[in-house]
Amino acid sequence: MFNKDQFVTKLKRVARTGWFNFWRNGTVSLASVLVMMVTLIVIGLISFSGATLDTVLAQLKDKIDIHVTFVPNATEEEVFGIKQNLESLPEVLLVTYASPEEVLEQFKINNANKPSILAALEELGANPFGARLNIKARDPSQYGSVAEFLEGSNTLAEGRLSIIDNIDYFDNKTAIDKLTNIIVTADRLGFALTILLAVISMLIAFNTIRLTIYIAKDEISVMRLVGASTTYIQGPFVVVGVIYGLIAGFLTLLIFLPMTYWLSIATEEFFDNFNIFSYYLRHFLEIAFIIMISGVLIGAASSLLAIRKYLKV
Image (cartoon, rainbow, N blue to C red; front, top):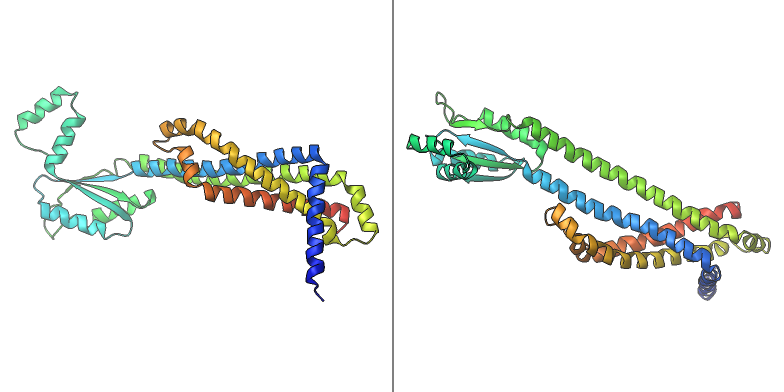
C-alpha cells in the first residue's frame, strides 16, 4: 500500500544525498557543469542559427518574383481583369500593379547613367511601355505553374491577340531554379546539422556524467549489497544530473547576453536588419525554456543511462 509520508521522506533523502554528492565532488561537478554548458551553448546556437537561416531564406524568397509586361494598347480594365484572376490562384501571395507611366519612370531611373538610351526614348515622343504586374508566389517552386496559367489564359477572347507582351519567368527560370535549390538545400542542411550537433553534445554530456558515476562505483556496490532498491540508488545521481543541467542552463543564458550583444551589429549589417541580440531578448522565455529543459533532460537521462552499467540492469 502506498504510504505518502514514507514516499516524501525517501524523496527528501534522495534529493539531500544528490545535493551532498554534488558538493562533495566539487571538481568533477565543476567539470561536468562546464561540459554541460558547452552542450547547452551548442543547443542555443542551433536555435540562433535556425533563426538566422530563416531570415536568409526569407530574404532569398523575397528576391524571387516574376514580372508580366503588357502591350502598350492594353487597357487598364483588361490588365486588372488578369490581376484579379492571378489573385484568385492559391499559389499567388501578392500581385502589384504598375501603370505605363510608372514603368516609364522606373526605366528612366534604371538608365539614368545611359544618356544615349534616354535620348532615344525622347525621340519616340510617346511612352513605349505598357502596364506591368509584379507577382510573388507563396513558394518559389510555384512560379512555374503561375507562368503556365498566364500562358494558357493570356487571351481575353477568341481571335484577339494576346495583350501580354512578356513573362520574364522564362528569361529568369535558371536563376529562379538555382535560388529554389539553394533554399531547399540550406533548409535540409540546417536540419541535418542540428541533429548532428545535438547528438554530439549529448554524447559529451553523457561521458562526463558517466565519469562522475564511475568515481562512486564502490559506493553503488555497497548500497546494492545492503539491499537498496534500484530507484533509491539511481535517485541521487539523477538529482546530480538535474543540478548540472539547471546550473549549466542558468550560466548559458547569462553568457548569451554579452555574446549576442557583441554579435548584434555584425548580424544586423550582414543579414539585413536581423539583430541577434534583439531576437534573444524577444524570445528569451522561449530560449530559456528550451535551454533549461534540455539541461534537465540531458542531465537526468545521461545519469540514468550511465548508472545502468553499475546496477547490472
